[in-house]
Picture 1 (cartoon, rainbow, N blue to C red):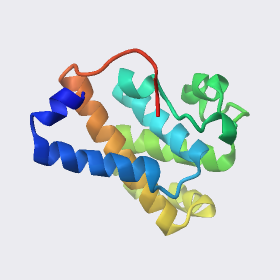
Picture 2 (cartoon, one colour; picture 1 turned 180 degrees about the vertical axis):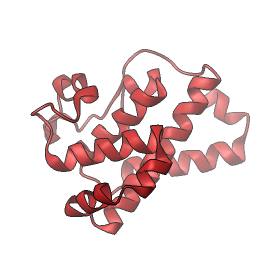
Picture 3 (cartoon, rainbow, N blue to C red; picture 1 turned 60 degrees about the horizontal axis):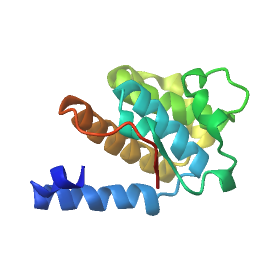
Length: 149
């Protein structure tokens, strides 16, 4: 991936800075970030994202069961209401963004868990994951081995 990004140093560098901000300057709790990231990864069929884990995950109570049940975000009892809401946002952001925009019931539920500031971090994070995941998938760039951040 680094080699591919070096083909376009200006845009690749900007993407690197955006990625750094999402992973190192984000205000989302790690479990919220990870459930949202994985919901987008599933929608994108992104092997890179599906195989990536955060080194700090265990400290936040994230184990492989957390990842194994991502597609069951609506019902798996291991997720909190906040995590389910983040997963729903991410899934719908990736699969039906216009219906998400118009869903007043969702926004009412969403604001029970997230401030506007945190919601902004969630939306921008999803934008990064959706865009880069689609680029990797469409151009068949990536790997299937597990990565640890």
